[in-house]
Image 1 (tube, rainbow, N blue to C red):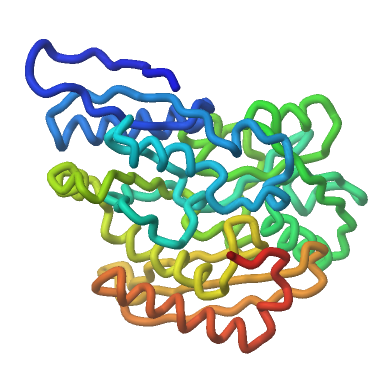
Image 2: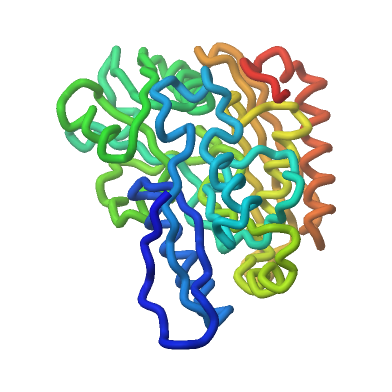
Length: 329
């Protein structure tokens, strides 16, 4: 675990230690949060780089049990008092509340959609027969296969691991015809221009919480949590709460083939409703359970959670449980 200190003002309060994974994307995300934290606390912030099990394992996420593999080391450092707060990609967080920690803030969400990076500037519909598409996500594989089948395209989804450079490198080297990554990560790295298509959520629903960041601190750090609440975005919080409650109610883990997206809908003048969409499918895309529900804009995260539970019950009634390769323990 290495500290990368930020310039600290002479005197005053000591720097807040912000735990982050070491990847370029994690460092970029944590840098954005560090700037927000400096603004609301008036304290310098230093990034503390921590290696997680998900970073060192070369197994596919579905094999190592995706829930928590990127967050456990950060959470342990928080509980030991080695860092003051931690930043995670919200989609990586297990849905169960951890003892001794609190989700202090969910800043404003970036674009939640998936992005295609394909050879020769191709869109998904323009890919050739037999195209090989890399993704480490069963959720993406299920929906890509179903979408391809809907217009008679024969594709092969190939499981891959690695950072953004590694994954895009598979396309640049010709090993794969395309890869699918989260648009939010590309945006935060300043690389969204490399995407050849942003995948419409009507075809590929993102992972629950995709595009959002989570800021955790110790539950005992009451004063810090109160300050961090200033960077929480209420609209993002209710949307991701609905999505993650759906995931939890389905008893599915982070690497199960579950997609969800909550949209705030309005008439151009005011936001009046929330629409929650969810999907579960087999990896080959031959069977999908895809449903949606709409209700008034939740006044609180607890109301958003109710919407998630309602949709999960409907999906389970339609057979969703039998389509998930992983059940949460």
